[in-house]
Image 1: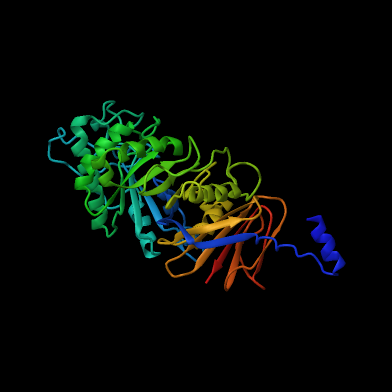
Image 2 (image 1 turned 60 degrees about the vertical axis):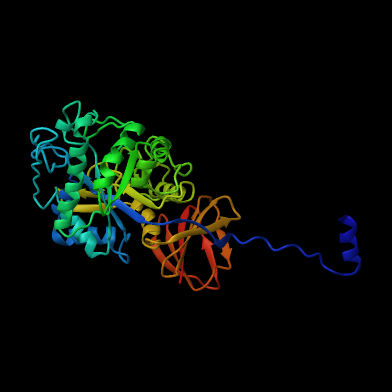
Length: 440
């Protein structure tokens, strides 16, 4: 090699150095998962906080959730199927059959108020914005169907009530259909591996697989989802149990898991769609910061969404919650006494993905030369491309050769999806910043 360089020097030539690799490389021939969407839940009566605000502020919050120009453009709404009797304390959801009808074989005595803790209202509003994915999920069966006689504190579904519970869940979807809302995804358990003092119910992976075989055949025109485990690693056992049973596998269309007990570190063991269906970070105060090292700031959410999409290969990402009160880690905080609300950078972190990556998009190959860059890329059904780059480092990185006519949207301490035209096909990826590049 040295002799070669000497020869080049004697001839008066300059050595040729290979061009450095681009900061971001795309490969649209590599196709990963199809995207179902991004969403929030407003279960446990959180919509009542929204209804307490003046109409103008209600509309502003709905815009922040669902509008594709003013807000996040969310495309999934997760609904909570109630299990408690009417008049129960705040944070519980009203059941469509609060009283025992006389046993598991007795004719059901369903009740429906057309409101469902204001969930119907929000669902109708979401539909007007274009939302078409409604995921109804039960935290527990009514207490009389369980071995502990209570919708709270865990307990398990009594075997003789399995069919009645399945009918109960299907009835819920039919009530929504009468209101003009089609429930597209139906879950029968939430965190079946966690006993909570609020509505909760235990299932082992094997019990969940058995119940799927009861629910699946009667849950027509809706996709059954399972099993919303407390952690992503823990969810793998539920997915494995369903995949091992041909009849259960037939009925479960979407495998779901949360990330409280363990984060996303890889895909669930299935070829079906998977969703990260509930999570927010732990924290002790309301926090609007982008990057303060708290672990419940906007930067944390951006990183978690990236990992779910790339490591977990999820098709859906549903955040908990859209809005709440007090020291919440929801996207927004509502003060129902002062009649005001506050917006966190967590909203804009999620919005950087949800506004631009639309249902039906496909994740394509993307890589970065700098390990400080977390990169993912997507092709939407309309042909537009979205490249998400989270710069986790402390130095700016220049990306030359951005493909096509592009606009960059910057989210950091000072910006919330601030648009910036891409000049000369070059984007500066600022440190500790999420840059969303949209190529049309």
